[in-house]
Amino acid sequence: MAFPRKGSVLIHVDGIDYRWRVRNRPTYSQALSEQGLVVTIQTESNPLCVLRVTLNCARPDNWILENNDSVTPSKVSAFIRAALADGWQPNLPGSAHEMHAELEM
Image (cartoon, rainbow, N blue to C red; front, top):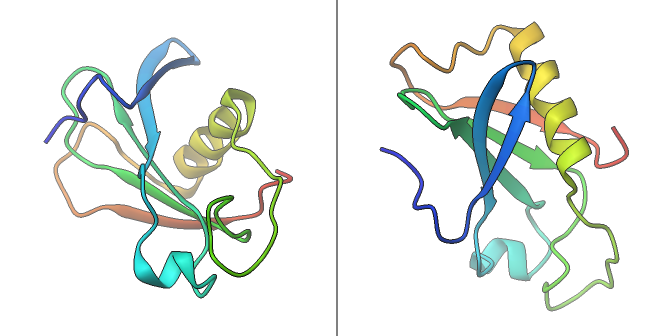
């Protein structure tokens, strides 16, 4: 299922258009800083397999820790390239490709 255009960001990486987004509200475990920030990525056209990147940092809107880190397009493009090298095939049907990364990538 494709991301809605509202709330997602278009990015162009190596000749392919992708959309990425961060959930607009934290889950309960993210609010308690038990789970890191999650970025989801898919191709703009024909999205069949989502990339789910869990980062090693808390969300900025968590209830416990202070966090000033932000996700930028350059970091997202690095996540996409790393996932493609790891075997993510975004135009083939399948379950989400899980990846763990550091925000300082």
